[in-house]
Image (cartoon, rainbow, N blue to C red; front, top):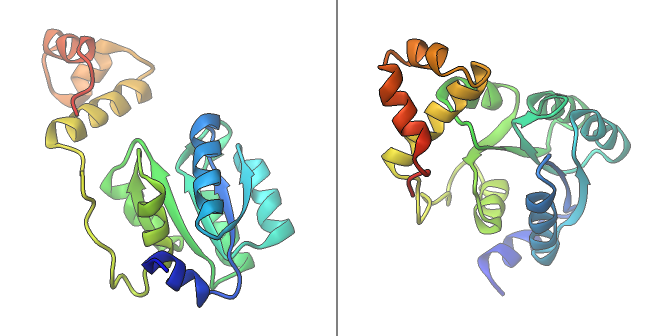
Length: 185
């Protein structure tokens, strides 16, 4: 019996709601979590996630921060109102300190950057008082974190290079060179 299986054995209810708009990632994560002993329900939108929270009141939730129809933090807020003992984590490809703090204030127990594997998700969901949460084996490099931040600002500026460069306080040509390159590992 693995550590995860042992931890789940002590959990009376293992219902899990995953709210994610990336269908392929959603399907892979749902299968992986079912294989780890969870009863999984999925949603692709905030509205669908809120409906599932009302219907089933899951004991665990994994919610993407940015969804097509709104903010995943609305799902976490609704879950904590419906079921205060529920444990939820936020997954996002656009992480920053302000949103992480907000997620924790609303009741999330952890905040993971994508791509997170199923073991990281299980460890975050089952960590008791943050004891046993291990640092990731392969964290994002500083170059990757910088690239993700630039991409996020670029998207928020409507893919306008000049506006993004102004907000990041960098030369427009430098930004164009960065945007033309592949993402670092």
